[in-house]
Image 1 (cartoon, helix red, strand yellow):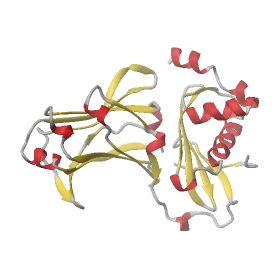
Image 2 (cartoon, helix red, strand yellow):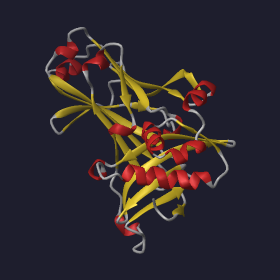
Image 3 (spheres, helix red, strand yellow):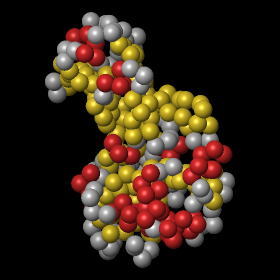
Length: 259
């Protein structure tokens, strides 16, 4: 674990936009105006029974489509929802003409999250077959990458591995040699803190750094005298292997029933 958690300023990650990129034979169907309805939905923390639409596109919303890098890019209508209010998975569904999803080609969805200080996260996925049926329950953190940032803004005296707490933005940031390598996102309502997502940039995965991030965050959270609920599977696994943190978290099942 790191010796200390540094403090910084910031404001939560919000959904700011997205695109649905289409390649192959499906592009002709889009161009021909055949019916297509696409949506990304999720239940919000605090009211999991209420689904909200994060992003959507339909053939009735044909404005803004453009050609780029050999594919058709469809701009999504998005809601400015904060990442920390979203569960670990979202439902992605694409309703089309019966034979459309069998045509050669791919459908790729991209969602962009930004905060006030300019940091960004990008979620992207190629749609599997189930997205054309009942809907695909897609993981958020596993498909998230951290957008590149200007390392010149980093302190040259930062340790090789450090965890920085952005209290205003409600996340902990993992830095490796001054570069942003991971995030642990949470949100606070009253005296309750809920951990929602842990994201590690793919190039830093496989080094045990997610545990450095989680351990540093939990050590800092322990000093804040808050009731802690966890919805992140990475944190679940960490606590199973490090039972000394077990007293910090409310039982997961009880936490989810009361949310």
